Length: 82
Ligand SMILES: [Zn+2]
Image 1 (cartoon, rainbow, N blue to C red):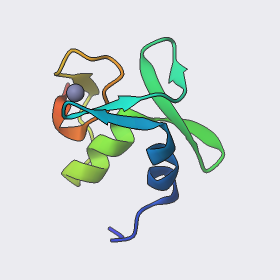
Image 2 (tube, helix red, strand yellow; image 1 turned 60 degrees about the vertical axis):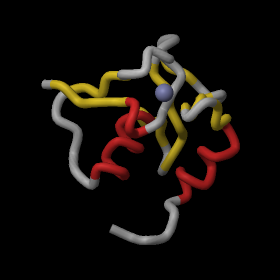
Image 3 (tube, rainbow, N blue to C red; image 1 turned 180 degrees about the vertical axis):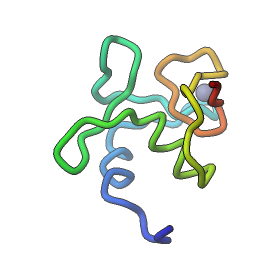
Image 4 (tube, rainbow, N blue to C red; image 1 turned 90 degrees about the horizontal axis):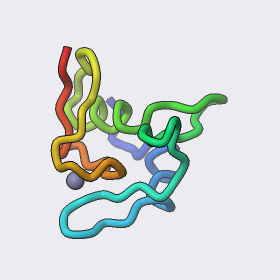
């Protein structure tokens, strides 16, 4: 894994407000619930990207928010579940 920030991470910062330990997403949301970011020609599930980036492994199943703020994208406020 590169130690440099990827370009989606740089771009993400423009749409994130850090508040009370949460990372609140102000960018595009798909279907009213899924934060997405444009990268390499398409929209990606941002929660998934961040989760895999921080946990350094692939998501198993779905990524669920554990802090009850649906627009929070903090990698530690999420867990994956088959
Ligand atoms: Zn949170």
